Image (cartoon, rainbow, N blue to C red):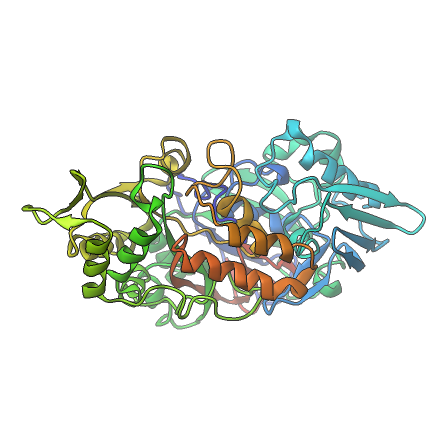
Length: 526
C-alpha cells in the first residue's frame, strides 16, 4: 500500500469489547453482515489525512478511486472508464452514471476539487510526496467529461499512483470537517455507525455499478452490512474467528497457524512487503562509512535473520516494493555482501577498527558502538531478530545497544531525536516512486530522508526513470534499487507474508485495501 507509515503508520488503540451476533441465512444480501478485524482504530476518516493502514482499509469501503489495480497488477476501470497517459500527465474519461451516497453526481469538477484540496498547503496532507505526486494539478473538460492530472515534470507511475487517491463527493467536498468521523463518497458502502476503538458499520448501496472493471453490489451474495471490528490482539482475533464472531482477519504472527486447522475457515498467504533495516548515514554515525557498512553486513547471515524475523513464514526478499510490483524481477540476489564472519573481521581491521582488551573494536580511541532501534510492539519475532543482529555484530567486536520503541514513539525517535545508528523500518510501499522522499532529498526534519542517504547514482537513475511512464521505466527503477543495495543504504531482510483467513465469505484485500465488490457471503455470517 502505501508507505506503511508516513514515518508513523501504526496507531496504538485500546482493546475491543467483542460482541456477539446471530447467524443469517446464506444469500440474503439485505440481512447478511460481513465482519472483519482491524488491528487499530482508523481514527480520522478524512482521505486527505490518511496516516495508517487501518484508515486505508476503512476508507476503501466507502470511497472510489479513478482506477483500480488487481491482485496480479493489472490496471482496470473505476470512476474512469478510459485514460491516456503521458510522461507528466494522465487524462481520465469518467463514467457518467456515478453518484455520491447522497445522490449527487460525480463529475470532472468533483475530481478537480479533491486534487485542489489535498494539494493545498493549508491542508497539510501527509499523502503529498507519498501517494500524491508533488505539484499535482487538475484541469477539466466538462463537454468531454474528462479530467487531466498533471505534474510539473515527468512522473513515472502517474496513472498507478491514483489508486490511493480516494475521491470525496457531496457534503464532504463542501465541508471537509464532516469527514472526521463520517464518510462522503461514491463507494459501494456507506458508513452508518462509528464507535471509536470498537467498531465501524457500513451499509450496502443498492445499484452501485462502477467498481473494478464495472463490478457492482446487486449480486445476491453481497452483504447488506460490513462491520470493521477493532481488535488489536491477533490472539483475540483468532479466538473470534474460532467462535464464529468474525468472517475475516489478516494475521502476521504465530496465531496464523491455528487458522489452518479450523474447520470451515479458508486461508491464503499474501506477501505484505519486505522487512528491512537502515544505517543512519549522517555525519558522526558509524553508518556514514560505506566500508564499515559493508563489513557489518558481511558479519550477518541475512537468510537466518530473515527466518527469525518472520518466524519462518517469510519469503526470500527480491526487491524494495510490495507485491504486486509494477517492475518484476529480483534486485536483491547478489547485491548484498555474502555472510563471511572472517572476511568481516579482516575488513574491520583494514578500516582501522581493532579489537581492544575488552574485545570491542576502537579507532583513534573511539569505541565502535551502535545504537539499534526496533519496534517493541511488533512481537517476539521482532525482538528475536534484533537480538540476533546484535549478537552477530558483537561477535566481530561491535558494542551494540538495543532499544525497543513502541509504535506511538517510533516516529519521534526515527525522525526528530534521531537517537539511533541502525533502525528496523519496513516501508511497505507499492510503487517505487513512493520511496523517493524517504531515500533521497532533504534530510529529516526538513524532509523525509530519515536515514540521511546520499546516493547520486540512485538520484540519477530515478530521475531518468521518472521520464518514462509506467513500466517503460522499469529497467531504470530496478537499477536504482541495485545502487542502493550495493552501497548498503537499505537492507531488505525478508519478504513478509500474512495469512488471510475467511469464514462463510470470500473477499479480496490487497495492500490494505478492500476490493469491496469482491466481498461475498458463502454461508452463515455474524
